[in-house]
Image 1 (cartoon, each protein chain N blue to C red):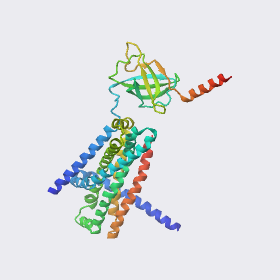
Image 2 (cartoon, each protein chain N blue to C red):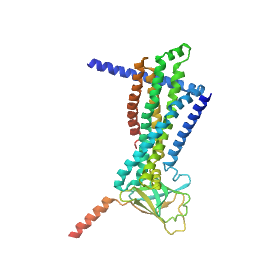
Image 3 (cartoon, chains in turn purple, green):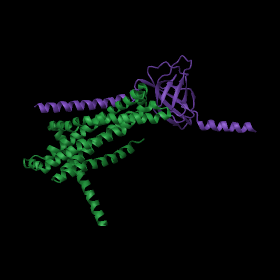
Image 4 (tube, rainbow over the protein chains, first blue to last red):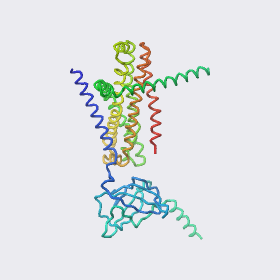
Length: 155
Length: 255
């Protein structure tokens, strides 16, 4: 009897430890609890060029992440990119004339959307579209511009 | 020569087929054992899982510590030592956790399963059970198989968790990486899908390692030498199978 008791106790402890480890791994090491789509509102913005912006890229204001990109797609009619992103419900007083630009974190970092506040009294809400946008800076274009300028300068 | 190769090939395919049929028979008997003889399963979870905890935790701690050291020495060349946590978590959760746990499991629990069952066969205990109208497959093999399947994912999770603490200990306490950056970067980069991949892998490895151990024991030649050979084969075949399957799962999870 004593034998079975200690076996059961050991097994119970083992399973509990294992489940605790699973719980720890799924909650502590992942950033899934960051911004849930349920307490957030969805905003869209159109860009001429999104560079290498990806789903789940951060949306930041003053450098603080306030949302996530949920979808990037191409609009075949307007011939530009439509980026859909969610902003946390807590930040519901962002002026609707704020402008969105695609920025790069560091020199080689991943791209994110930076919001600059505007001065309007109306706020962004579910389904609104940001009017003022600035595309991603494509390094190749910058370089070619620089090269062509040099060419015309030397003449 | 050619004929020998052909015979070996046919032999291999036949053994492989027999293994599949054996696996199906185990699966078919699983539900009734799980419901009616749960006590037997608990005892095997204790044997395969709880008794393997010490080796798993010690190995996890040191593997994590090595990841911390290696990650730090390489990443600091790019001034990116804050990413040590991400590096260790990715390696542990997706690869090292499931794979090393499966190899240790094969060495610690698989061999004991194979030799136990092989010895039962060599001493005619399995035949005795049959004489008493007890199906040894259901009474002996299925609980051991289930014990292994239940234990593996839990052991792998414990391994990864202890490994992360090992990496934390080395990187933060020893080498002076910022603790906040260590955990924050990890949480920002890792996705639930990465954790799920590790859990899925460890579950598959649990099934593979348990089936192979039970199979080898059950088919051991009933002599002292045969049991010894079965034990060795368990470790060798499990290691090969686990590494091949690991490659296939990783390739299929790639996005």
